[in-house]
Image (cartoon, rainbow, N blue to C red; front, top):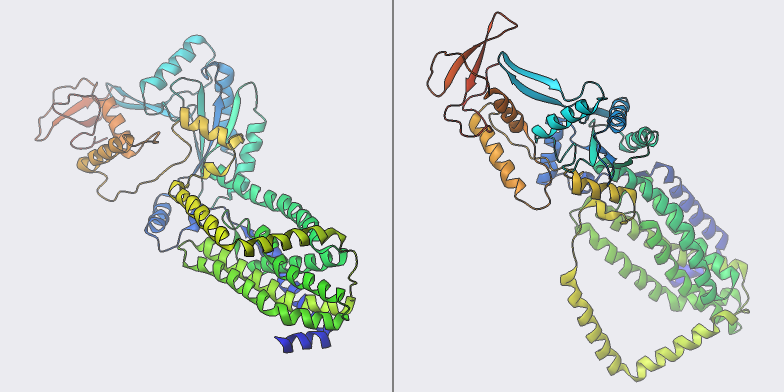
Length: 541
């Protein structure tokens, strides 16, 4: 290290040029950095849940949806202006690129049994105008509890419009387009936008916003603290130069290596700002001490680096080791976070050992104007003497404090709900709260079952699974194809059959159609006690 210092002192301009050029080359990767707010990508690809999710997406397509909530704590959504607004929002959302399907009470259908068979008709073809029409719509929707609590709240105060996204949809763009649709319909009802895609889009937007707001603020605070500690403008400028040339190349390297900013890596630049200044502060403060003793610039640099090389290296190496330990995490984004922060600390170390001494050799700062750091020096010196004098008391007090604080580890809660990433006063949190309290929630869990979907036993098992899931806490709505078959069965049962042929396993009845000359064959459950459930064999329609 002494040879390296001698080489830096002998060739300061070459040292400065090489380090700055390397830093600028790495910085060119910044435009390539992308933001990934997809929580799925935080999971390892070989994780079982990740494999199942990928298989489910390949088989059934996307299951994520953006939910638009219309309503308010006063009044009801069953009035002509509100129903017209729901219909307009639904129709406009269907034109948004990236939305595959839109569902709401204005386009959902009901299944009714007729003497000639089944009839599937929309709840609402046109916006009802009269009180009787509105009352009929309300009765139809609440007569079929499938949609109550999901598309319309039980208290009739809120309705939901669900836009299901295509698998390859650009979520932030879809979210912004939906906001444009919603903003044109605000008032007098409250309108909120919820759903996991909305949460992810807002998170991506906030990541960019946080970086724009936090970085200048941290730099300003850091510069003020450095001026108090060092006492000279030149010392602050050199330290900030080391910090900037550590942070920007690290972010640029992330871009070159196709790294991505995510929720867990968003704080990386701010953390690097704090870590990168440690080495340069040690070097500069010691340098000013040597200058104050009457040494020339070259002598001061040589003496400074001779004493500070080892402490600076050990400080950086231990920090790097701490962040490199994150490579043992199963989460890819945390591994990236540890690796890139480690590189940033390493590059700050390189600059502190090479570029910074080279600048100090050339610029030859003077030792004066140390009035700002006289008080910190005196306070820290007195504090150090007190620690040495009362070392036993300090060790005992520190040990007791560590033990007391460590007891709080068992009170730490693991939070995985993305809604908790936002403040309680944010619109997305309000939307999620309304959705959870009135509309069955805005986040979904998909369960993929493999079996014969035409088998009544399979469908009944699905209903049993639904009933079990509904007993769990924090579950709003459970739905599957078994519910559709159950609804069909409910509609079939009231049909009065014409006497027909008996077959084993059920009453197979021929029902004459009033509109067609052919015969509609329907299988009806024998000994049915409830107007729900799955028939022993599916209706032959």
